[in-house]
Image 1 (cartoon, rainbow, N blue to C red):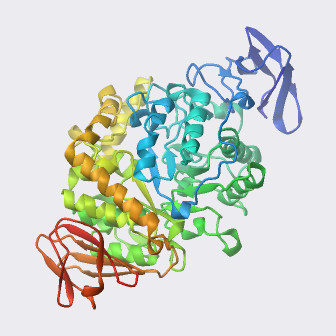
Image 2 (cartoon, one colour; image 1 turned 135 degrees about the vertical axis):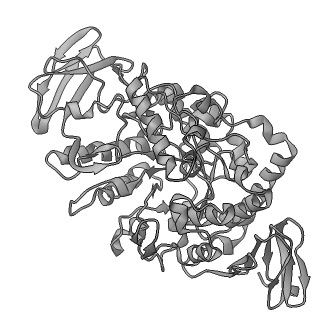
Length: 580
């Protein structure tokens, strides 16, 4: 027997279609409809018909085996045999996050295909795997940010059991798993939520159309839809945390903001599950309060992506100044971010034409996630170029050193660790020709702001754009790529074995630099990271260079001279004082 429930407050009649039958549902309080079906259970396909119209998938569908437009399927979550009893995730504060896209991470493009590559992540020193969205989306491939069946792992990846196998396998290897979820919008293709109830509102405008209704009439159940969704991923799939996409685009004027309530809902699960959970945010507002405890006026998230750190580092290394990179580019920007948490902490932004951000001074560094590459910053380039496609090997290695010795929680993007030759482009597979054309033209308009030639932009709808984004695992064995993997692994080992590099206390990082000569020194306790971005050797002043010992280096040197350490052009050295 299975009880079917659906929220459809404006419907006059609701029927559930099961095994060729149409069964009338009974209205209950709050706009809900329900019915028990004797011979329905796990594996049963079903759909809901509102007021006699064509049946639609369940808004809370746990499985869409035939795509987002087809009937839903019942899942018995208790039937899966887990082997992770007693699992406890390592602390995020001392962790290393690895972001991956299931469809391009392995040749198979599935959850099971990812399992076959987990040993590489363990050997590298990764502690947390962050999956880009896996909720069911239209077509054969996509980034996942246009998902429409938010409760159902996409069938092309392996469906519900496939995701459970991946999480179980990660836990068996000591890897925590975080999932990227999108609560600010749904994709347009296969999105039927508006047919069921007031899930959206035209009172606010977002880049994706009508906003999710989080503060208008009927919003209590809309909010509950997302809260229950978050709890489902953590409870039924044993996930260790969520990364919430673009929280700056979540519009809510309620006294108790959606993000605060989401954090309360998530962390209330910890006693029930017997394990600690993580909640990350992508926040373009530079507002550190999102990742501050509720007791001091924050939203209660564990941490948030630090966009300023990426932008400052990228602009410095590449020299790019187009788009939002116009606000960055100096060594001082990198220094400010490392020392104070943000670059734009209330100061004027030329790109935005206004003041931007809020001070992060006093906020622990481990409440930020820092990276040199991620899916957005690679994939939202015209040709999906990685940092290793844009700068010299020396600068790639400097970037890795700065990320993996920073006061922030470091994050890598799939393939970054071996300087993958493959690009990572934006790709879609919309069957609606008008929608496909709109996406294609929208990308071209967007990239015009960065000065890129529209003719250079790969067609997101072309299957080749997807295929060229798939990692080539065989190239890891080639000398240059193998040496790069070794560099990343050595830096991660150094981070995890050096207490000063795990110290997230505000004020624990000091940066010395010379903008003209192109060098900077990041000092974290007894550790000094010396980077020379210049094109000639430089002598970097140190009070007692004879007391320094080399923990790791690349690019020649360093060489101790009187009152200084001499470093080669485009090189990096990680040093420790004698009493460290």
